[in-house]
Image (tube, rainbow, N blue to C red; front, side, top):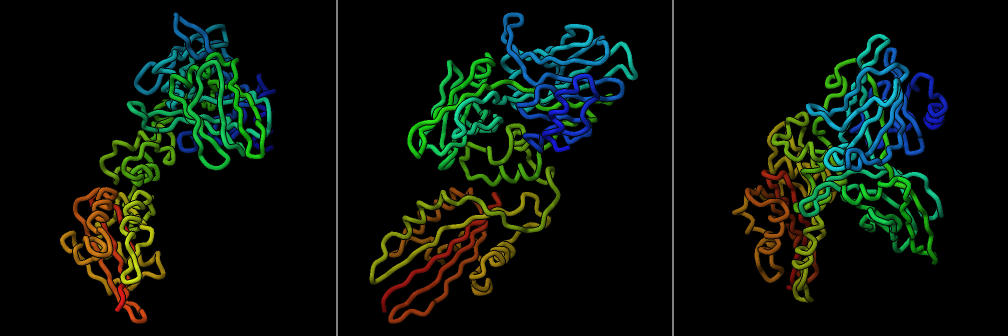
Length: 462
């Protein structure tokens, strides 16, 4: 039975034991707990089941908003096959939300708007203890994840709205949490309309758009869950296409245990891939969505020692975005004429491992650069030096060919400044009735682990 068929089987098996596998692949594979008995679901699944020992517990995936004690709250409903004696909801080390028994075998979880609802929607798993009068044993803990999801789509197939709305770490003033959705449409523009809760719409590429909500606007879009959002695309082929969809709070995963919840589901730590991605972003980066979800990124922001995250690694070079240096390169290239000429190819940049097995050296860095570039000259033909020796290169001094001092200043700003280890190379090339030289440089900044590689030339008439 394939996963989609398995999910449909769960829908019709209300009184049956839990399905043995996931109904859909987890939206967030790193965040999700890959434990036997964990059920996950897309927005089309109406109920999730989990069975442990003598208890079968199921949650309705669709949460609804109600006013409780004067506060709008997301209400989640669950059913058990045993009579309930006590229920309690919490996150590690803190009571969270409110769990109530509403009949002999039914319970609800109440998540008030504000900090508690925002935290859970942003990826914080919620634990619910369930005590029963009968069965063996009588004490269980459920783990659920709740996320914003679109469903009930109606309208044109020319507009495709992703079910998922994912929390990301994106700095915007004093806020750093953004809930982001995606829309695919071969369109020049996309507008979203609703009574409230309208996202900020931005272009991603030629046929896709991002939808960004703050928590406050997201909550408005979700409450009430019966009110759809309308997406209108100005199609490239002419005319418009429209689709509607409802944004709701969904229970997206459910697991059940008789053990200690903290042991069965320990809080994840910063992962090496996420840490490296965060560290490798250019200075001034505000959008870290490329590195993982909000919680994955925040776990890595305050890690002081990279070796606490991963094992020591041999020297390697990971490519990073050097587009911030393009204006400085273009400026250096200005000024060639028939009597003298010069040019600098697009600058490339790399980063060395965050937890190196041995301290990197400029000699080792240059060897790695040479491995990746078949046209790279023999490193022995260049000179190894430090910041004081950079004046040996025409690239980093102010001269007839270009403002090298400004170029170096831009590179320092990009790489973080401080100590620099360098390899400089200049070699004459054949030139009829003229003089021309290839010139290269590799700069290594140990404090930030950044490597900047320059490849240029200059020449003049005889």
